[in-house]
Length: 135
Image 1 (cartoon, rainbow, N blue to C red):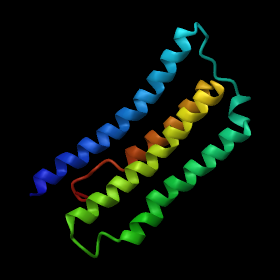
Image 2: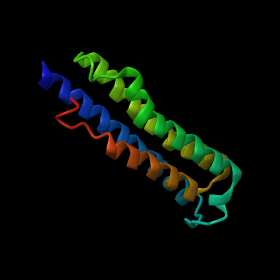
Image 3: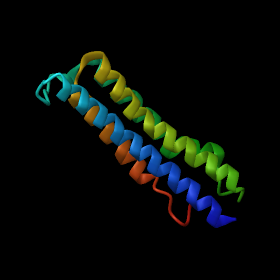
Image 4: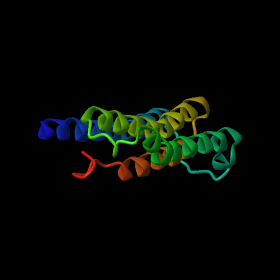
């Protein structure tokens, strides 16, 4: 039974990481199809929409790291379904940063904003990699 649960959690984790890579790839393809240079302007990183998206992403990631585990408290119950739900919530809340980056890219065309928010999502997902002790 435990071996069956390990596989879906790791598959979910790799799919969430893969989706973040796809976001960056899609944006890269959009830029290269328009024959535009890829530029990382510092002005893009001080835009109010980007700052708001970054703050929202960090709040959600902090919730995924600290508050959601305390609310669900999987250490009290050894129910594998509760652990799976907790990990899925953590993955999804980490993914929100990448989604916000993609939305900002399609609204204003800033590749720098997308890559920063996807990097935040990727770093958060790295910390949630399914280990033997958490599965």
